[in-house]
Length: 261
Image (cartoon, rainbow, N blue to C red):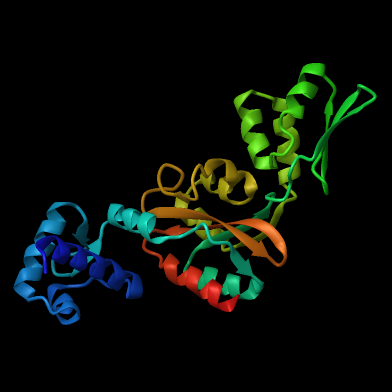
């Protein structure tokens, strides 16, 4: 076995063992699991510690992966391109409690701007199919909004923020308050921040903070993370947010959801 292979195997074993039962792992346990001499393992544990990839909570305890190690692990391990099927709300709530994660589902993926209409040159109507927004008519605004046909409401909001279209931002914000369709374990949302910043997790306003589907700092405090995943939630096309510790076993959560579906 190559030196580099041993290092990676030991680090991966520490990560997976800690995700399994949140217990620090020592050289003897790794020796049993990997059949690598304990003396060799101790050398690699020292190297990994020096690199800041693992740490000891107490001098006499085993090692646990560092926060940055878990961040890299989740970036490599999580596939969030696959749409989830949520058919059992009670099961999702149970998962939230069991794994101590915050969960939010909100609509909006199907809100595509279909048409822009002028109402007697007094109002501009934005037709999203099931929803409409009305703005005061201005010729420049009308021409600008015409160029946004085909975009979803979140993309339109991002553009409105960039061009300081405040009336449109306000109208979209009001509409978005009705899009939340599920929320569980709000106390975890508060624990992540320990201050009033937790409110940004409570509704679909969180969408504008997710530049990518996997987020760590600065959106979340150190040691926490969030996932944004496309999902079919009881027949509705939603964005599903999970937020919790970097040490939570998200692979197991996603696997259980897929098995139930």
